[in-house]
Length: 473
Ligand SMILES: [Zn+2]
Image (tube, rainbow, N blue to C red):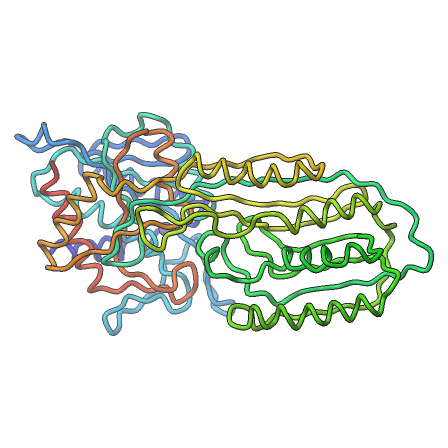
């Protein structure tokens, strides 16, 4: 059975080191695998590999298919487990229908995709031309997909084998970019009789700015700006504001140092604000904590107008879901994340990130963020843009895959897209018009020790792939 063969090959792959950035051993192994079977193979300077099986006699007119998986895996282990990912084989057990790595990651993400490709290449079913693309460093920034040269493969249809839920077919992902904002600021002597206070908000749930942006979670930078804005009329001057972390994370904490003339009234207001906000976020962020106490700072307060411009524009900054998909119910189409703010002596910097499957919507979202901060006198720059994959509900490969799924399992697959990045978005940049789909077996706990593969779902995944490839036209 083809699925058993896939599992045999995957077991062999678990013995080959393939940490992101150190894929050499698996890259060499793939090239040798192709040479041993007299299959065409090329490798680019980055380490991406393409193995080619020409069309069977009589199948020369069938359109070519590209099957794609990534070579690397996330290498995580339990801290007390002695293990070297650069040389040791991954230890796994098979129990209760799952293949499990108890102390390390298993690397079924995406080793099972590689194994499925190789098993199909060895299978003797007559098919059209098949190209199997194995990219590098997907897990650490999709460097392989990014560096892929136009024309590296010829097929116009690609099946990505890097999804984690059997029964789900993915047909889209978001692209993104970061928008950085910089205020140049001046400081001045403190007001007579003013005191310094440090307010902090911590313990937010946070989360991923793509997958979790529609969950209504607290953004602590936004909350801090909301409170400070409510006190602007009361002689408040901003000294510093710092919060948030990575551009793709929802801010979990934020603190601000302010100079105020009525310290007690300010503290009382913060307390009342805290109790409102705790109630507002009682379900999503039960761990929110608020504190306001006397502070000191080496910095003088910002001029009143500079502080007000920063606080007002932070408060008015968009954050969260901008639009939902018009094709796929429940899918976020466009969003923005007010990610972080940091204060230096002469500058205050804010980082935001925008996502959308559609380039026009992503850029409009970024322009809206720009407009808000430019109006307040900041310099704004857009950077690190990567393309999305806008779902095409009329895609040919989608139609073929849905038909195959119905025929094999007498059930309806779920058709989905994600509001985060996939390699597929990057492929579109170099191969415009490429028709794509992504599916895979059921994996759980990926990227962490305990990662596991559900074997029954692998049987279905392999049967589906085989059915699609065999009958593709
Ligand atoms: Zn993966």
